[in-house]
Image (cartoon, rainbow, N blue to C red; front, side):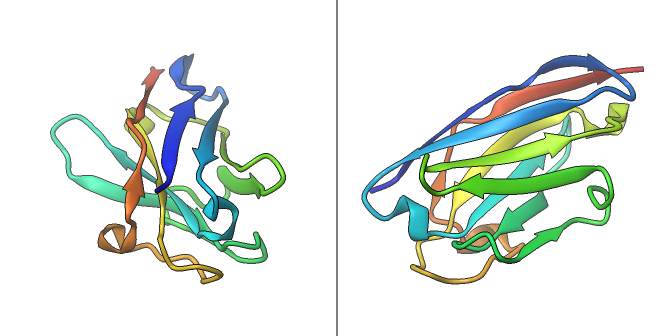
Length: 126
């Protein structure tokens, strides 16, 4: 079993930055690919970024490329999402997810993630 807890959300002005953190617990959590997804007001859940178990590869949604950076620290059982140049359209609840496939690569498909956090709200004002 893996538990995920997100933190770091908040209210920020357009152009600002936030760093989201995802604390993972569980024996094998540092061997699992991790992803960030978001769900904006009136929208479905969408992929933001993901990273392999080792951190050697990562992928981003087009909306995140060049502005967001995903990283992980397996010694701390944590994943991060650094978000720069934030826009009002980035307003959403951001979820951390873990894919229960040991030592595997990342995926953008939300149905391939087994564990989910409770989400953290990010609000970007114009």
